[in-house]
Image (tube, rainbow, N blue to C red; front, top):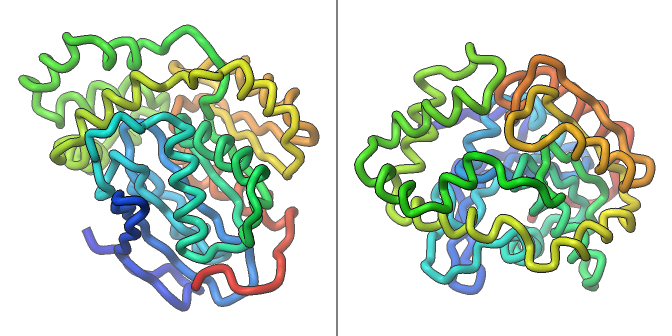
Amino acid sequence: MPESSPAGSSYWTPDRFLNIDGTNVHYRASLNPSPTVTLLLIHGLGASLESWCDVWPRLAAEFSVVRVDLKGSGHSSKPVDGKYSSRDQALLLLKVIAAIGLTDVVLIGHSFGGAVALLTHLQSAEQTSSSRISGLVLINSAGYRQKMPWLIRIIRTFLFRVLAFFTPPWYIARFVLKRMFSVRSRVTKERIDRYAYFFDQPGTLEAFIATAQQIIPADAENVERQFRSIRVPTLIIWGAGDPVIPFDHARRFHTDIAGSELRVLEDTGHVPHEERPDAVADLISAFVKRIGPSPGPHLS
């Protein structure tokens, strides 16, 4: 559905695509005329860039904002190449950042997108680039090993393929959202319709399953150790009632990432930016303003 440019934004591109190594990556960008950092919003497993629709207008009124569909999601390509791990997505995202011309970026990732954000930062630290990752926002982020969440266990089974083939996407979306959200009033027909629409796109189911099968990195223990090397300002936002990722992981991020901030939202489930968008936007806005802008252009 069409979107309008938020107040304060001088340039709005509804849909853009980048061809990165044969993969078409879909993104939407809003450029704020003031010299600010660019916020790069990274959605979670089974979602799309539309999952940020409740918070991006508020953020785009103050900052430059880019929302991206990860490979296999939304309107991005869904190749049958098996490369759907968080590391694969991070390497692709670094090329997206370079191709767009982002120079000063705050990565904001939810769930699986949080794991992608972490690996994007860690990979960028090993490369010479004109882009700078100046901050991280982790929203109910994946990253540590854990007992496989019930949803991932289901997705990885043959039974899920059978059920997904015979069950209309709308019912699957409603079933999952009602179990992810603590704020049930936010599980609206419009939201269910949006998730169902993208889940029903050709190739999405296969990409979804491939991602679930690679949800734990092969070098997970080494990745977890690297979190202690992160020195950029980091904000951790967590829904206290998350049924997917244990709250203990929020504490672990807070302990491992020196100087990080932890903000807990009570009576909130796995998707705070859709359940309590005003609170999440307030937290992100205040955090980015504390980081401070850097001079120079942010989008080309």
